[in-house]
Length: 423
Image 1: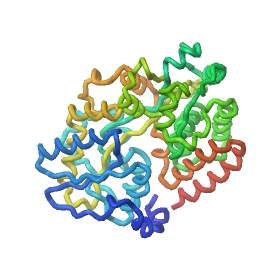
Image 2 (image 1 turned 30 degrees about the horizontal axis):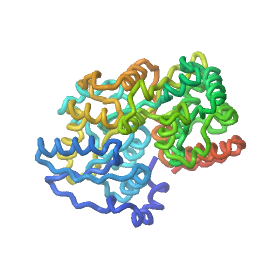
Image 3 (image 1 turned 90 degrees about the vertical axis):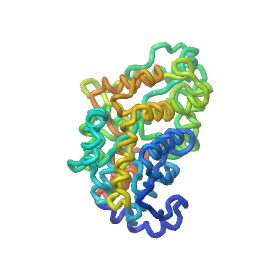
């Protein structure tokens, strides 16, 4: 898939409206320019710790340009189309790096992977699944997440739920019990659309399986297939049973997290970064929050876990390619800083030398859950190309507003996906 069509048609107009951080940056040999989406409390201090330590060790300055996550998604692609990428930029592994690799916007990193001995540093599962595109290493991971059903233990206990749901019937029964105790079973903050994707991901992976899901993400199967219709019907069953707190599309994921923390809702399907948010709000793992894996749906379907792998790419036209390579290798190799990053952001480290003792009991359980799974899947908006991901995210948000016309919604999504795959 090429950047033409989806990007070049809009690049000129968007470059005029992007945040000032996306303005063209002069780059000198003694500095590395970096753009990333780790802003606010979730990750910024950890990212700055990486940069400061690298500057001290290497003598190379890091020019840090951080952009809000939603602006970043389109903005970095516009910069790629305009050939104005920074030396280093963050991305989630999967279809998005593939998009810019295929467009020739990024440089292979096999040389630094070998010279920095990253095979001895990065866990094999992450390395095999996240770093290789078209047969070469392009992506350097710095952290990964797992999406699970995070819940308020006190709220569950008050409703008499002491054993977490393990299958679909158990999930529906828990919803009924919680509603009888005047508690919303699930909080969802889908104002930015992407938080809704985890419901689609787990329902599809748990019924149609990872091979079908991968085919859908590539455009080899269709949104109008019976497998997808079944998934949307199951999701609608939860909505019709009043399992979600109201006005999901008016709330951000942090609002949903706050509902669970207050006990207004019992659970939220979210990534492990929620633990970083709750820890920052003085909540205690196990006592104030915990998680359970998404319930198993169909027998015979491999158990999948879902989540993003965050990392960095080096621009093909980097003005300081040597410094850029040194920076990305440093970020994954330094075990002490990796541990700091994992704890601050509520992430799991790809560095095998990070002591698991650094994790909270909840994060250690997440680590074990990922290790025991038969399949690790990138979440929807990282698993399918960006033009198609935008169409799908729109579908999820529209569905949460009105789930009554599934067939029409899927037909429209399929038409949009076909166009997106053809660009």
